[in-house]
Image 1: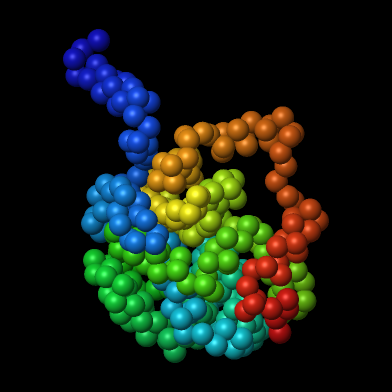
Image 2 (image 1 turned 180 degrees about the horizontal axis):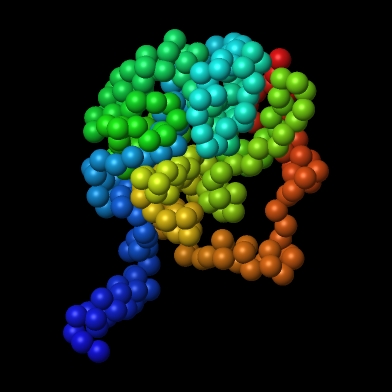
Length: 313
């Protein structure tokens, strides 16, 4: 083996040995940018390329949600307009002319990450999508997220739209502290009632939160350019932390987020996701589907938050 081919392997083995010998070292995770902060103080616990400007996909819906929650009036009816449906790929396919409360849409936005819902909320709160983008940039700047520029409420690709892992950690910290958003982000299954009366159970896109007891939620994101992104929060023993991973891969972003949260919370590095996958293959653990999912969702539904109605007109 040549020296050039041997060195990367040797360095990897040395790094793994050092981490095994010293559990205080952060885990080696994939991602273009990574930031971990203390949710209470904002202190940075770990960072890699924190100031690199890049698209952050749907994780910027945290800022959209924060603005909607802070504006209040969550019982207000929002009438869906044709312009709200000019989006893809993840939508709830809301019909123009139907109406839902801001609170119902806010919950659907954070649980399912629907792009049409983001547009409807942005248009309703801002008066127009352009005006809402101005609100996003002003709020981000007020939070100290000064290396960001937002152009839409859903994070779909747009030229000159970007943020950084450091900025997203500041936005996430504000969203985490918001008492309206906190319980919504921790919701694994939510029964969304359409205007015509039919019920559809929404499953949270955050696999890390669904499969790890210490993860308390936050937001996923993906586009071809942004790659897989995840903002996650965790709590244990009175400590609360937030992890931002941008530009990762589908096979690593959720497990890496769990590993980072475990490290920041002082928990042992286990592999609950892998165990869960093996258990599923053996039939020991089942993901709720169909009626079982509806029962699970209804069980949690009334604890989501007071602004989410049981039906929408």
